[in-house]
Image: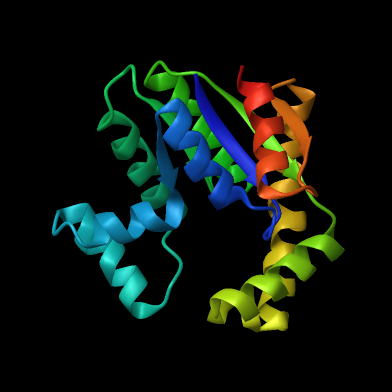
Length: 186
């Protein structure tokens, strides 16, 4: 079964995704990375995506969902996929659900819970330790957190209403959070 990983910025989602992929043999679909990969491919879709990225524009919903579908179809049926960063909003959620159904796959979700204060603290630490420019600008960090609350939280609530999501405490160490995740997957 495929897995959709949710979590506020700073929750350690990317780190946990890599650990899960290593142990449980998931293919990681990370939306930004897939868009960059396809933009570099030279295909018609890749050239379209590249033009949006080069101009500094958001890639339109339809194109993102086409990239999602192509990435899923490129994987063998028995290859589990871990989705990181998609669906981000309710429009993506509706399209994602349709695509998953069309290709005959199933998924469950995990949300790594972390308070906004803890998230900001971790992001500050990450900016200092790793020199991540996108994490150093507090205004941009706050904007990303606000977007998560405004756009992604309704998706999490809907999946919760459908009993498709498990919430885990993300406030512990990387290893503590990973043990909680492993427990959910077993």
